[in-house]
Length: 94
Image (tube, rainbow, N blue to C red):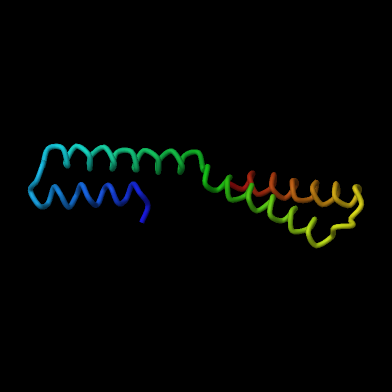
Protein backbone atom coordinates (compact mmCIF):
# COMPACT_ATOMS: atom_id res chain seq x y z
CA UNK A 1 0.00 0.00 0.00
CA UNK A 2 1.39 3.37 -0.98
CA UNK A 3 1.41 6.33 1.41
CA UNK A 4 -1.44 8.10 -0.37
CA UNK A 5 -3.56 4.95 -0.20
CA UNK A 6 -2.87 4.62 3.52
CA UNK A 7 -3.87 8.25 4.19
CA UNK A 8 -7.01 7.73 2.12
CA UNK A 9 -7.91 4.59 4.05
CA UNK A 10 -7.33 6.33 7.40
CA UNK A 11 -9.56 9.25 6.34
CA UNK A 12 -12.24 6.83 5.11
CA UNK A 13 -12.11 4.84 8.36
CA UNK A 14 -12.34 8.02 10.44
CA UNK A 15 -15.26 9.24 8.32
CA UNK A 16 -17.09 5.92 8.61
CA UNK A 17 -16.50 5.85 12.37
CA UNK A 18 -18.22 9.23 12.62
CA UNK A 19 -15.29 11.30 13.88
CA UNK A 20 -14.40 14.61 12.24
CA UNK A 21 -16.71 13.87 9.33
CA UNK A 22 -16.28 17.20 7.51
CA UNK A 23 -12.46 17.16 7.65
CA UNK A 24 -12.33 13.49 6.67
CA UNK A 25 -14.78 14.01 3.82
CA UNK A 26 -12.75 16.92 2.49
CA UNK A 27 -9.53 14.90 2.70
CA UNK A 28 -11.08 11.93 0.90
CA UNK A 29 -12.48 14.27 -1.77
CA UNK A 30 -9.09 15.95 -2.29
CA UNK A 31 -7.20 12.65 -2.47
CA UNK A 32 -9.71 11.15 -4.90
CA UNK A 33 -9.69 14.25 -7.11
CA UNK A 34 -5.89 14.21 -7.19
CA UNK A 35 -5.71 10.53 -8.06
CA UNK A 36 -8.33 10.85 -10.81
CA UNK A 37 -6.53 13.90 -12.21
CA UNK A 38 -3.19 12.10 -12.24
CA UNK A 39 -4.68 9.02 -13.88
CA UNK A 40 -6.31 11.13 -16.60
CA UNK A 41 -3.06 13.03 -17.20
CA UNK A 42 -1.09 9.79 -17.51
CA UNK A 43 -3.62 8.30 -19.90
CA UNK A 44 -3.68 11.41 -22.09
CA UNK A 45 0.09 11.86 -22.18
CA UNK A 46 0.89 8.15 -22.01
CA UNK A 47 3.81 9.09 -19.78
CA UNK A 48 3.88 5.66 -18.10
CA UNK A 49 4.25 3.89 -21.43
CA UNK A 50 7.03 6.25 -22.52
CA UNK A 51 8.83 5.79 -19.21
CA UNK A 52 8.64 2.02 -19.63
CA UNK A 53 9.94 2.17 -23.20
CA UNK A 54 12.84 4.41 -22.14
CA UNK A 55 13.72 2.06 -19.29
CA UNK A 56 13.65 -0.93 -21.64
CA UNK A 57 16.04 0.77 -24.06
CA UNK A 58 18.44 1.68 -21.27
CA UNK A 59 18.35 -1.87 -19.88
CA UNK A 60 18.94 -3.43 -23.30
CA UNK A 61 21.93 -1.19 -23.95
CA UNK A 62 23.34 -1.78 -20.46
CA UNK A 63 22.84 -5.52 -20.86
CA UNK A 64 24.73 -5.51 -24.15
CA UNK A 65 27.60 -3.53 -22.64
CA UNK A 66 27.78 -5.92 -19.67
CA UNK A 67 27.76 -9.00 -21.91
CA UNK A 68 30.28 -7.51 -24.36
CA UNK A 69 32.77 -5.51 -22.28
CA UNK A 70 35.35 -5.55 -25.08
CA UNK A 71 33.03 -4.39 -27.83
CA UNK A 72 34.49 -1.81 -30.13
CA UNK A 73 33.17 1.73 -30.21
CA UNK A 74 31.70 1.08 -33.65
CA UNK A 75 29.84 -1.97 -32.36
CA UNK A 76 28.48 -0.01 -29.39
CA UNK A 77 27.33 2.79 -31.69
CA UNK A 78 25.61 0.23 -33.93
CA UNK A 79 23.76 -1.33 -30.97
CA UNK A 80 22.73 2.04 -29.53
CA UNK A 81 21.46 3.23 -32.90
CA UNK A 82 19.50 0.02 -33.39
CA UNK A 83 17.91 0.31 -29.94
CA UNK A 84 17.04 3.97 -30.52
CA UNK A 85 15.47 3.11 -33.87
CA UNK A 86 13.38 0.41 -32.17
CA UNK A 87 12.40 2.95 -29.51
CA UNK A 88 11.30 5.50 -32.12
CA UNK A 89 9.25 2.84 -33.85
CA UNK A 90 7.60 1.78 -30.59
CA UNK A 91 6.76 5.41 -29.73
CA UNK A 92 5.13 5.89 -33.14
CA UNK A 93 2.89 2.90 -32.43
CA UNK A 94 1.54 4.50 -29.26
